[in-house]
Length: 307
Ligand SMILES: [Fe+2]
Ligand SMILES: [Fe+2]
Image 1 (cartoon, rainbow, N blue to C red):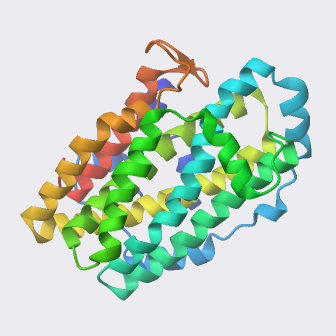
Image 2: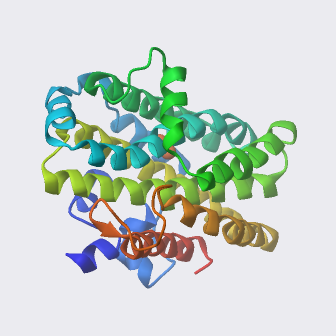
């Protein structure tokens, strides 16, 4: 069990719909070879058409009972770090993707990124519905809710999104032809934020709720979010593989961005209330969480041509 989790694949991601994304992190072959087949941009678009889902279909009544009656106030507080990071993270990535989409050099890339903007919007609504139906916070509108939940975040989260990512997207807004800036933005967005942080957090949060038997509708929706994220990261992998093979400069841009952002991303894995590194979150140590994130990143980098 432990070894399988550390390897990046689990029963969920062995399912045909997860495997269909061809995210390199879900392929054991990527431990050994860079020569794995990835979907092209058009195939990724077609997969998006086949993988639609609705936040409106989820029934959160059992989740509401769990949240108020089965989960203690202390545990609710601890869970707020993960929930808030995702909720705010989804809103930020939804809004930062526009300049990346406009800067993408080909039509096929742009069309796929348009589908991703729609996905990220759906992820924001998923969290909003969960918060509202379950009664996680009392806030009137979406902006009030986001402001209230942001109190649970840590400083590294702000550095990663509001400084590192926002700088790159601001650059692309004024200079969409700057392909090197685009490579940096995709590395940060698709490889680090989605690939390393989001998919790692999702794995441990779903695993924890499944073991505890809590929040069934949340888990059902979050699985769909995770499947979308694997498709997004598959786009990042095929795009960066193409660029890394095109020009040494792009390869260096990927490396540079990883070196700059990985320590900050690592800091996002620790909640603000954890004073030492020996805390447990969702039943796992920081070391186990890092190992999972690291294995997924190594597989993707190998396939891109940097491993
Ligand atoms: Fe998302
Ligand atoms: Fe995403």
